[in-house]
Amino acid sequence: MPNLEFVGLVNSLQATAEAALGDLNAATSSAARDGLLEGGRARQTAERSLKLLTMLAEKTRGNLDFTEAELLTEAIGSLRARLEN
Image (cartoon, rainbow, N blue to C red; front, side):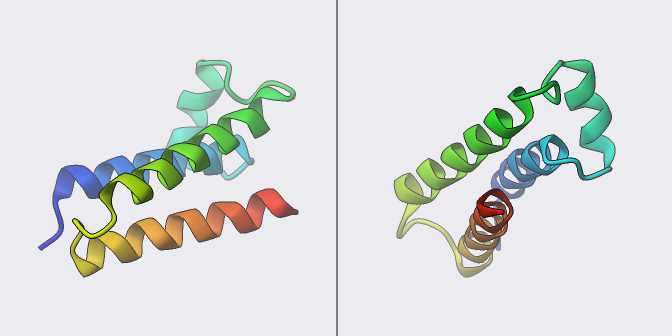
């Protein structure tokens, strides 16, 4: 069974990156309020979230259940694809 705090952390980091990349969701208004969507900061915010998710994957390798590992892998893959464009 996945750890709900872990799932929340991954979802939060992914939502922050997606908000910085222009997705409209609840995180967008918070990110905009915090000044994370201005100019070049938006891409930096998304890249920082991707780096954190990648570090999390490296540090937790072998310690996650299937659902947690899949969630993390999909979040990283999705953000990498968006940042390559």
